[in-house]
Image (cartoon, rainbow, N blue to C red; front, side):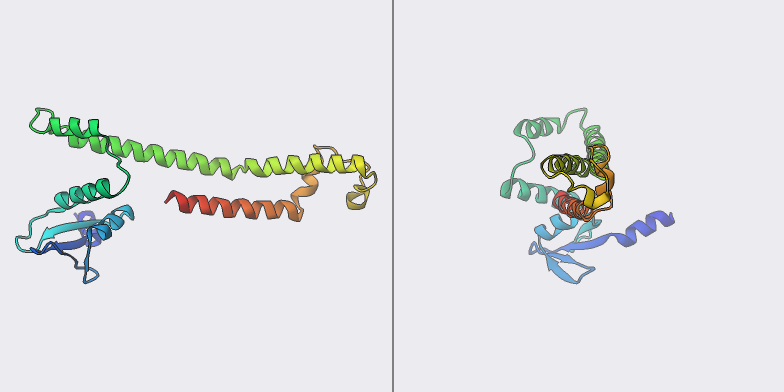
Length: 194
């Protein structure tokens, strides 16, 4: 019971007035459907109530947001899906559809999180940094072939092989720079994914 109470405390109450204006009671300001769409994307829990009757009209407002999004932007709901959905109204299976759609969306989200985590893990192993290390090792071997003795100034070794070169560069500034660049690229990818 206390858990339900805590969840209600986090829920923002939006009142819809007869003039079709929406009022956010938490921020004490009028908002638009675009604001509600943004709140939804950010995971903010809210409930829309009719200001006069107190009836919960959240479902109607969310449907209205979907209609706005579909008409203003890139359409996400295919025509055949919409036709099938409409045909389910009044059907004996109508009561099962909301649960099925919720479960499908939950599975989609879970798979999306797994994919994102797998992508992050693969970047965590940093295959590009390993590739850069190999490239640097090959470059050093090629440079030593054209400038014999150039490698002696760095570590005193007579020759560098691809197997030993990455260890030499691991502590070098080139690798550190590459790691910083990869971290910056990861941050940008994360921002784009939001």
